[in-house]
Image (cartoon, rainbow, N blue to C red; front, side):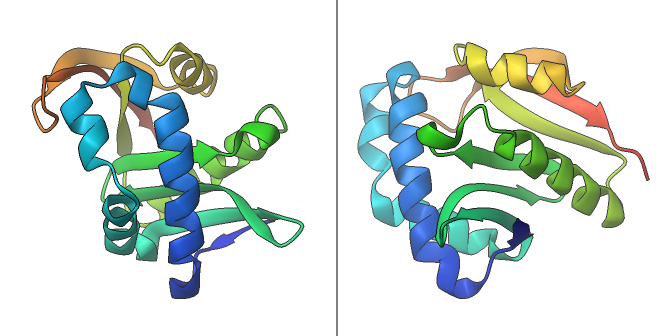
Length: 153
């Protein structure tokens, strides 16, 4: 079941985010970026978007989440053992619906260029690459794909 995150979910969501990011993104990042991605970093990041975070639970534990700010879908992460179960697709669809309800016509996200699994997932969900650029907010200017999708209202 997908639901809105509560303030009390933030520590669990941040811990999940920390774990998955280091599994999936750290291999594609420069050492300086990896070093700054502490658990506290993820707590701060999730606190900032707590009002737009959706979570999915399995047996009482949060196993996936999505979050956005404005028209940018910033996070969509699912625990390894729950990948391929439809959880990510459900979270993506739910986030798109909520973003559209809030007035977003065209949503965007930034996918690390080397994250082929994520890229294929988003492309299957009809997100398209609009441009390739360097993320200047990360040490070493990481290559990213700016992807977009027109949301149905």
